[in-house]
Length: 231
Length: 231
Image 1 (tube, each protein chain N blue to C red):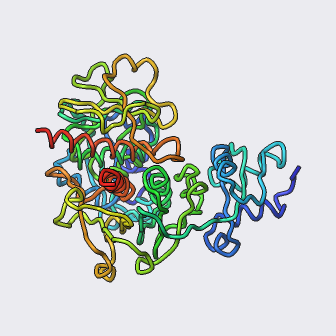
Image 2: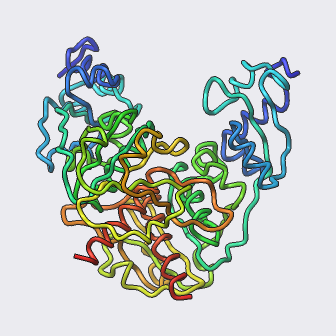
Image 3: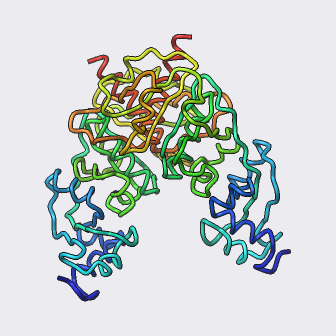
């Protein structure tokens, strides 16, 4: 039973709140029974798991928690990164919100056969908020990291100002759905690498944009269905 | 220029962090230039707007901010509630996360002609997090509050365990898309009020569920397109 806040495992968990320590060690922490179960189910490479009241005093586990009080279990795992292949992948550029990154990983796990590929300027998919938002999908379907230029396949960018409707393209695999930040979109330098740019049709008097995780989900759903219908 | 933290306007903004005070007063606060602009564009009923350095000392505005330091503008507005009519509405039951409620309001603004109808157990759409997640759509398209039994139209529930695929129904207006909490789904008592229950088709080895805002977006997109195609 760990009874000291200076314990090395507790110090490591606290360090893993910071991206630089996650990158340096290649590790990350997951809190809560759901995520620890998802890690087990996916065969994640576990460093250690601490259960409150069994391995560690509950107050000390709370002290290193990102979620706050009442944490019952925290596991530390080795990060995994996928190859960026697949018939339908999602490429993100400059998506800084970890909740959106995690939600897109969860949605891709449900709807796409390839991974989420993180380009420059994205939130760390192994940050506590992203892992939580992925609901464990980060274990079952690890993300990839690459530049758009390194990906093969047809590159379909989503931009709400594009004149072409998503439903007017005939997608065929392999395909990469490309999304940028909600305001900025994809940087101008990537335009030349993209094969087509489409928008999601919205109502008149609609807002300027959809949430990036919402847009990614709608596009994955539409493209996956169209590819299946044509297969 | 407000120079005292005991100023009545500042005290009101602080109170409006709490749901009970929002309900008691019928008011809510919106932070940041984007939201204040969205309020103006929608003709929201404004009580007052405070600009840092112009109406109030910046530190004092920071002190009542929900977003933390650097807040430049906070407006206080009267809540508006819509009638729960429309050809395509979204009914939420027990959706407790304000970010999801706000995101669904934003998505409905883009894709559905009717409002988001909040049933029992939902987060307050006028909480700071929900207003922020709505990106101002809460001004342009105010939510409604009602019980499912009070709504007319075909009631289509989304449940990932349902045997029927969303794409196998022929939706016709008026229609209500019904979603419950991510784990619990709709409560058993509502089953008898629902006309059909469908799932969003997912891949094998997919996660148990989608994020509720993601599921709502995919269903709105599919149903709105099908209704438009048939019209």
